[in-house]
Image 1 (cartoon, rainbow, N blue to C red):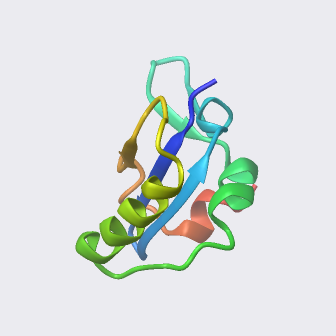
Image 2: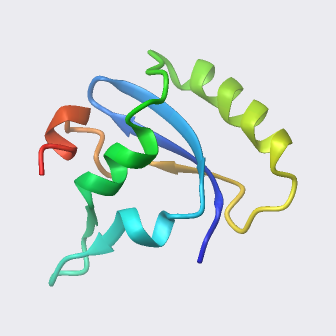
Image 3: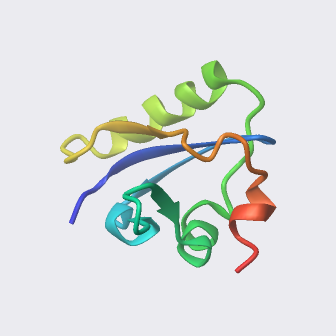
Length: 92
């Protein structure tokens, strides 16, 4: 199980959270493309503040990472969904 601070980059903004659920919210389809589990994304990022820029969300990510000194993934940016709105990801 991977843990870390994850930054979700979507069409409408950026969100950051600490999570141990990376393996739950990112899967692969039959063509080995990343696919997000909308329900788990909602659970992990739904209550997070939405930031307008990468610089401001990275400030938050660094603040979070100081609370969790040892993580498997450090700070990880999930950007393969950058052309989708957050609501499109969690609509499941």
